[in-house]
Image 1: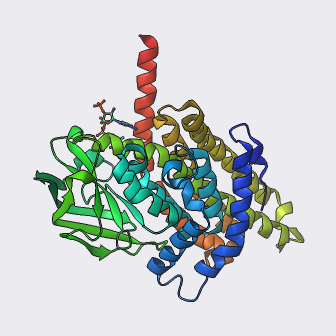
Image 2: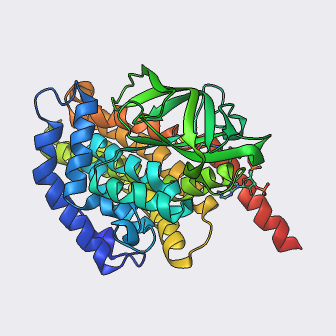
Image 3: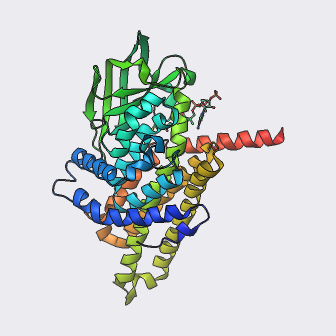
Length: 394
Ligand code: COS
């Protein structure tokens, strides 16, 4: 493993360092057999299922759920989630994706579910036996999540769900979806329910190909029957449940971006040390050194914001809307720049298919869009800042 000195920062406990090293060793030996197997790139559904199974069997998915339901800690430890995403992303974008979606897709159940719901879903998520998904976005409701129009109407002991969800990760392979839909007006009229993939009236109507392939789909709910007992919290709690879940997982998107950026820096450094140019090593040229310096700086600055947010949530146990938004915004935007510089240092080879930096260049792009685009994070940060400023004046 490359430089791990950041794990000595005061944000971490000794078990976080052990986790990073153990996971790195596991990922080095276990992942290539899955991600580089013949046909693995063509059939991402199958690869993803295998990754979820392997992550479950090895015990890594236990970090996605609370201890009482087969998990590792009493409540989700965001630093562990971030360390895991960073480490997996450094090895494989798809492995990080498979891990992350188990957490995001079940996070609302861990945090807001009742006893029956937790028992029914979380142990299977931790074991890698049930695949989870988070269904919030729609064609006309992405950044403006409160504009969603999928409806939920209570009829006896069931809800009837009607509408469409778009850009849903794991759409098509998930066993259940944490679904956000409308039971009333505005952001206070959103309700969260658990929709099983085998519910009548549910279908996946489109599979979406993207630049860094992973399972992604459009979902249709056509009088889909969802037991009222699958509602998370009360009617109208859904928007806050979605945003509180995102507060936890946005930090980990930053961590994944950090993993991509660290890998790009590793690759670029290796290249700069071995490439001869103008009678010297690329690494001896001032222009290349400038790039490496900027990359190293951006990686450390992103890591500080990511682990500040994770530590604040874990240790201070307070709402981290602003810290999580800063971590996601900075780490994803900077990772894009770091990876772009790595491609540049590779020259023509950097854009050749099959090169790691070429893969990273495609992998990073969606992270600046999903779970709140960079622009949304700026809205969130500005609102929180103004709020604090005004309160400070009172
Ligand atoms: N945790 C808990 N509650 C929160 C919250 C958070 N992080 N953020 C906001 N809320 C609450 C607010 O306090 C408010 O409740 P009250 O009216 O009781 O005060 C309510 O939720 C509505 O908040 P707000 O008025 O800020 O909502 P907006 O519709 O203006 O939305 C943004 C604000 C843009 C920040 C929100 O829509 C968002 O995050 N969008 C991006 C969504 C996203 O990530 N989409 C991708 C889907 S996952 S791939």
